[in-house]
Image 1 (cartoon, one colour):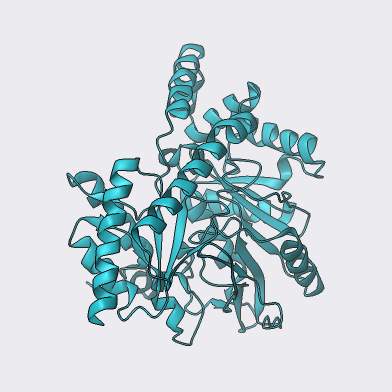
Image 2 (image 1 turned 180 degrees about the vertical axis):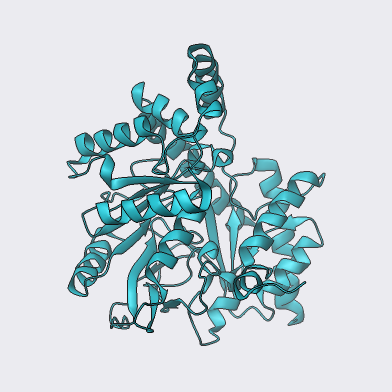
Length: 417
């Protein structure tokens, strides 16, 4: 069969496809230790809440209405208005429902945004998305209809006490010219758990404004919900910011609901794209989220249930890793948010792609670091020495998985291959 150029581009087996295949295969494989994919934890208090919310919404007809009716292409009106009001009252942001559009998951939202802004332009030029530092989210990598739509830079690496380190944006390296369509960064960052400081965000905003390009912030794990963020930082939005959120890490990945908070022009464009590509975004997720806002639960649960659950899990995973792997070349990115730990095995004699294969053969699923260094042309050793580990499994499975990781890493260091 002859595919189009578009077909050939998106028929390739990508890093994000491998990640989701591993996630699906692992769920069906007895004994598999799932330290790879991004499925959120099954937090008992949140599962109980959604069970109770479902009963109430079924009884009052909200759930059936969400299942049985299309929303408009912008997304469910009641939720969009409620969210705009919540953000305006909580943070004083100058927004209305005209600044919010919904998508079928944030992954499709980024596909829309990147191709709306980058790639081949009407004048024949080619523009790119600037990622201020890499590693960055694996799902960005193959999202461009055109090839080569990302450029990124190595981070500054700050070595911390207790075997930890932290990435920072190297502003001395950043080059922004007419070829850059937008700046994009996740906060907290998937895969590393890094949180850009308030100073870094304000510097990026200033650069974006100076060059008349938007700043895209991937806020899937951030403030104000689901609030899986452990640093004392401020939420950020203004009329030049495209803030992308999600319901997934509240514990609702299956409803596929992404949220884009942006200028009215971006909202209109996203709405038009929704209408053409998918008619309308899903109704079920927004119905649940609207229920949570109406009952005053969305921000409360994020702060009082979700955040402390993941903070405790992250600290416990760091403890287990440092007990199991004592080699001084092993370091962990400071856990500042998100649901992953970023592990750095300096001077590792094999790539983490090879390590991934060895671990998978032992039913331990992680994600090799190579996939996350998007938009870089050089072959940086550091990119082959890191891996992403999901820390949401129960303690017993975490200990088993970490023990196997420790064995394979020690073997590689010992044998030099």
